[in-house]
Image 1 (cartoon, rainbow, N blue to C red):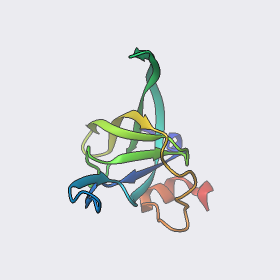
Image 2 (tube, rainbow, N blue to C red; image 1 turned 60 degrees about the vertical axis):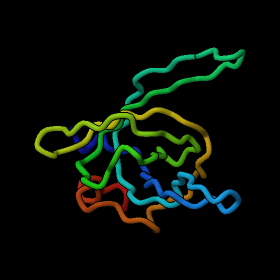
Image 3 (spheres, rainbow, N blue to C red; image 1 turned 60 degrees about the horizontal axis):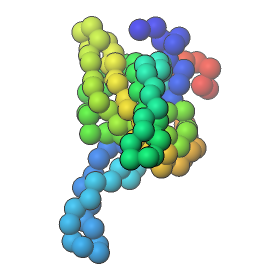
Image 4 (cartoon, rainbow, N blue to C red; image 1 turned 180 degrees about the vertical axis):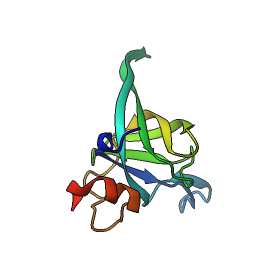
Length: 135
């Protein structure tokens, strides 16, 4: 993992169980961003699927970030202020807690682009030291 390759922005949203006001049951929501960091993105695979006379596109990506202990598989991820929402399918620790390789699968286009800015959420100090062009 090289710091110079970590130039994409990844926003992680933590899962929260909320009460459905209409029916009283619980629903899973991802209301606010809990972590913003820099990452390297690799496209792993893509497939065009036909199910019940409907065509869907399945997309898988892999991102590499610095090690963060607060990242879990129940989070959703937004990459580079796009509307695409990704779920985490696998997390692999690189080395002795140097970084994380995270496999992502696209689940929808329901995120709000540009909702997170560098002014409202702070990057971790190691990203700011390595990526001086952000300032």
